[in-house]
Length: 328
Image (cartoon, rainbow, N blue to C red; front, side, top):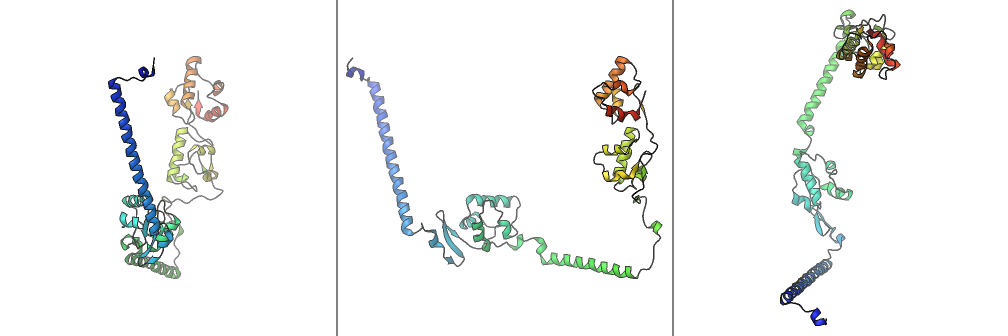
């Protein structure tokens, strides 16, 4: 096989190759022309910037009537009095704020935010100390956006109110200095609505106390008194002061004012109650009630809680806690 036969192409193949070569040549020419144009533009811009002296930011730091101009990222920044609550995007841009900072200002105002002082503007996200120091002298908050309590009428109203309160107090002090009447102490206080609290060393019998007696204990009001009585009814009576700690959030400072004298409990017969009935007691959960029910079904009546001591749901403390409330 000679080289001519090896590189021989049919007519259709030659057309495809010629088309691809033409297309590649055109693409290379376009890239070359555009690249050369951009290079010249960038170079020309740099030359113009250098010629005009814009590459030196300090050249435009001279103050003018309404502020001064300086160059930041190729932009001329103008400082002038503005209200951040009403300034539009054009004004904010002239002040040298970045687009994302301007968006943050608009979002803040759209959500009802108000700049009430120049210090509030310092909280703008992305605002640097240098920017704030330059803008602070030009921040002018409009009167409509000042706090309402700074209005003269509002301040005068509050001052008059304080003065009136002081006059009433002075009149009362003068009356009290001249009043020689000593009231009858027994009727000084509504002991039904506001019962007198017991003193340190005095006690209330938890086994028989009602809500009226319980409210005499320091730290116990109507709400806690009802909670104590309600939990005692669920238990079947209190046998120890420590049971009050089982009430969620109970004020432990009130515990020294309780005693349990001659406890009286309502006992429940474990051989007659259903699982649902046993579960109503605070000291019996579902698994314990089910264990008692299964024991009765398999072995007959229960005669003592010690029969359940081998069950995992009845540790010694659970049996001791439940003992005052059961019968057989």
